[in-house]
Length: 147
Image 1 (tube, one colour):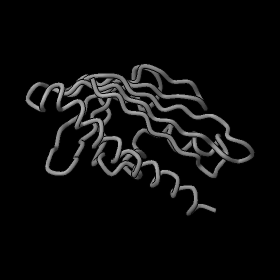
Image 2 (spheres, one colour):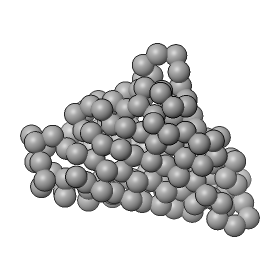
Image 3 (tube, one colour):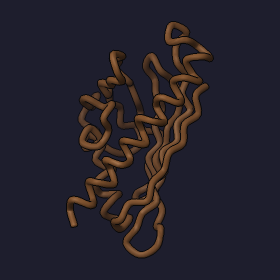
């Protein structure tokens, strides 16, 4: 199992960050690895929302099927990955002083055997951590550009 944790402090109030990240379809604006998001039905937020994210990392492309398993307004979004890659992920938001937000992203993922099994978990975790650190820089920049 690959375990990844990345976090950043965003120079914006928690409410503003939440209003942006709660829109699941906006994640393609700040996640370099997320090419497109397609909801499976009419529900676009809250527990039970199902969607597919077309994902690209280097030459690897796959469709990541997910279901939202946790939704606490202003605080967290949790997902279960149900496609080729399985596991759990979670975003948490917390106040970090006046007009600042701590954003933390954790994932526990299982890669299929043909992606290297345990070795794939180790290498995949390092690659994803690098990609997601860049994603959080882009997320942070979304708020810097609004000021």
